[in-house]
Amino acid sequence: MGTLLLLVAASLCFASGQHRELMDYLERRLQAIEDRISVWHEQSNRYATELREFKQLMTALTENLEQGREALHVDLEAVGTRVDRVEREMDYMETQNPAPPCVDVDDKLVEQEVTSIKEKNKAKYNKLSDCRDMISSFKAMKILKRVGGPKGVWMKDTASMLGKVYIFNGTGEDTLYEFSSMRDLAGSEGLTHGRLIKLPFAWGGMGHTIYNGYAYYVTEGKEFQLIKYDLQNCSVADSAVFPAEELVPVYSLSPETYVDLAADGEGLWALYATRDSGRNICLAKMDPGTLDMEQTWDTPCPRENAEAGFVICGTVYVVYNSKLPSRSRVQCVFDINDMVTSEEAPLVYFPKRYSTHSSLKYNPLEKLIYAWDDGYQILYKMVMKKKLEV
Ligand SMILES: *[C@@H]1O[C@H](CO)[C@@H](O)[C@H](O)[C@H]1NC(C)=O
Ligand SMILES: *[C@@H]1O[C@H](CO)[C@@H](O)[C@H](O)[C@H]1NC(C)=O
Image (tube, protein in one colour):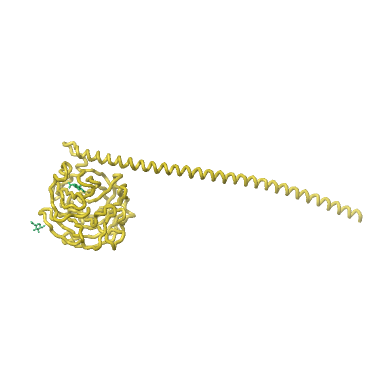
């Protein structure tokens, strides 16, 4: 019995010794883990601090970069404007000092007068029957002349191959200038060398058009009178109150124009806006004989920041810019047949970097846009493509 007790006591003693060893071991392990955790803590704190410092550094750097970029941008804008001025002057000087014996390519582009009457009619017939053209891009531009003030309109009769060029200088005048051809205008010393046509009423804005031997324009008084003026025998052929109420300027960047008339291969159109139409531009198909409105559409094109517009084959193209002249661009398109939408139409930028178009008149027979840019008379040659069938 005595030996048994001794044995139990000894084995207990042994067990408790083993237990202590285990405890010590575990404690050492825990200590090691704690040490490592505290090292990680330290490291991650250090990383966080470093990251914060790095972020601060980057912010400072980006701010500096941004400032530099802005300064550069301002410089570039200034240089761009100057380059543009010089370019325009050079283009203009070139047209002032032409090499007389040979016709340059651009002049060919301009003087497209077709000789045979048969061909003319065929071209016209094709236009009317297959009017599916839409703008794809710009092909070329030519600065033809610098006559008149900052705002005006110049164009040919959009339904005639005769080649006479008309100039409406200013936004509220009554003297129209007619030149027998593009060459005649290019070589003239100034406006007064053209044929003077004194209109019975002053025009308002820059929305006039010449179509089929008539000048169509709007006078601005208490109400807006639409005048149809016969250019052959110099008499008013017809006049009517423009059939829309409470007109507001149709393009916010050309506030003188309340009604913009356009003639394409399909007839006479009017772009206008009323207090009712809100932010957007309206389109009307006009009867060139009676001056009645045949049909109207509300386009999705806003007036805000629009400078001018034109119509090709039943599609309205509205050209936008900014208050400080930047690059003009066709940014809203409306097709009366829903064959083209703004989303599908290419965003077409005008070739010059800085411009302010007071008017843009499309000539369907030549596929040229006649633009008036700060007193310069510019021609834009377009690349056209066919609208897709629906
Ligand atoms: C053209 O219009 C401007 C104002 O826009 C005027 O200063 C200038 O005298 C006009 N030129 C002619 C030839 O009428
Ligand atoms: C002018 O032409 C129109 C037709 O366009 C004609 O009705 C009018 O009698 C003509 N006026 C003159 C004075 O010849």
